[in-house]
Image (cartoon, rainbow, N blue to C red; front, top):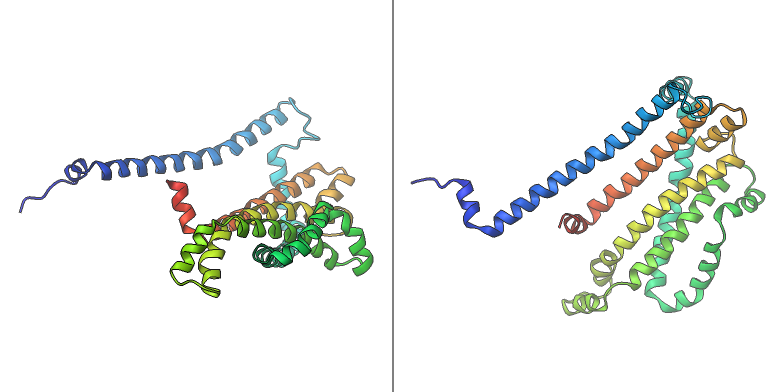
Length: 282
């Protein structure tokens, strides 16, 4: 039996050929995006290094990247950076998880039940308008100087962002999807888990991305004024002592924490919502 070349089969089917070309084009674009994402910060660092070394910018203020790197190694070896990173990560993760989980639950309930929405939505909107960092002094008065006020501040900002997004996600679900689910026999818990939750997930993960960034900002701000440890304290104390090397190390570490946290949220979103990844490729 004569074998037919694969190229001939693809040529006979124009739809498959177009899909193949589209897949290759998407792969090339992803590779290009990866290269650009890595090359851009590397080029900027090289330019920064050259400008500092040649005196185009003040090296005392804009510390060369090589000096920042050596300072980071020193802070890691003496345990300062790892200790502060661990403290900040603990405050961030605990507050983010507690506040985010509560916000998702409350937001879904407000989206489903109109009575609850009418009773609590105006109150939450008013509280959300108050900067959560402004509540820190009150929390310090109530709970004293410790970990609780810092964690609650992070939890508060995470709660309100997720509450708003989860409620909006529930209310934005197409009523025809709910009717279709009921037509296929989905009632009660089945309707909740197979229609409402999948329809709300995109809004929830959008809220998680926003809340992650805001939570990092808030925990850093609380460590500026009400802590003697953490990455925010490292940056603030370095500024007070005019140690720009250590200050840049703290700022870069905070940025890396934000990238990692956002990346984790993105990874979970891809696992939980595989259909969104297919739509993005399309």
